[in-house]
Image (cartoon, rainbow, N blue to C red; front, side):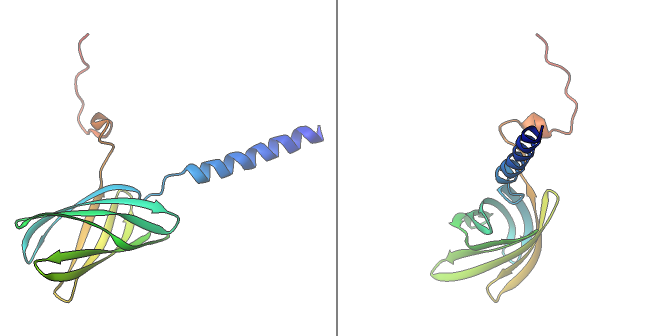
Length: 146
């Protein structure tokens, strides 16, 4: 009976560690933001990859001047907070765009500092699973006909 109890206890510990190891980080994945700025409307897509407390990935900005994709740098996670830098090269100028955000469900509320030029508060929303768009649909579609 004692051996049976030990086996059950060890199995519970193993499952607990597996579930913690397999749990996807809440920041990982694709996020979209849209906001007005001094240079007009901007649309951003952030793709985050998380390794412990480190964040890598890319930021794609769509502006009236065109689209630009960069690898984010200095990415860190601390609990429900995320920070990173978008190194932007605009003409011959290097501009450091710093982000500090806090997770709130399927949103990240960011404070965005663009060099010494401007600061904005923006909200990025999680992009639902694109492989199955119906999974996140808010409409009731009629059943398909055979």
